[in-house]
Amino acid sequence: MPFKSFTRLSIPDLMLVEPFVHQDRRGFFTELYKRTVFLSEGIPYSFVQVNMSESRKGVVRGLHYQLKPMEQGKLVTVLRGRIYDVAVDIRKGSPWFGRYLGVELSEHNKYLLWIPPGFAHGFQALEDNTVVLYMVTKEYSPEHERCISYRDPDIGIEWPLETIFLSEKDEKCPPLKKAETNFNYPL
Image 1 (cartoon, rainbow, N blue to C red):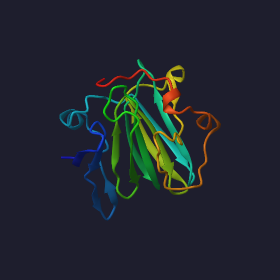
Image 2: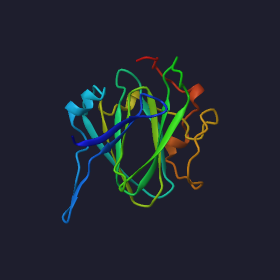
Image 3: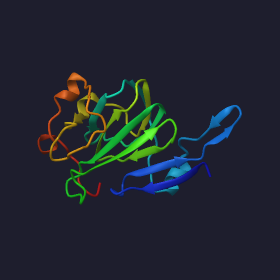
């Protein structure tokens, strides 16, 4: 089995994945995704695009999502450094609507976070030169892209670092109550 565990988190549709890491004197090897295993764990998606970003300490990227019919599920991991990774439930009618979950992903723990469609996603880099890799279930579509403010007081995300750097686009994101969404629970 290439994965130690698939753990459902406090918002049950979010899942923390811990892979087996095979280490020896050469370094390590690990599998990040295996379709048959993910299917057996209740994740019926395949990935069509792989993205990578590098960020300096304090950078916040997000909270991003895409509207239907280009909604994306994301499998996120860190290749170098550490992040505080956040998913916000934006599915109308969900018992967890507007709630967030945050976890630390790092090059050391090698965890992956599965974020299904219907969630906004963002992260804060906790170290300089942090490299994040994420696989998505649908291609990027600029006309379907939307965002929510990282500092929405109704969500109340407690970012680990006070110093925050944002893109101009992310600085203009609205709060959830003013954001365009088209997700209902259950999807």
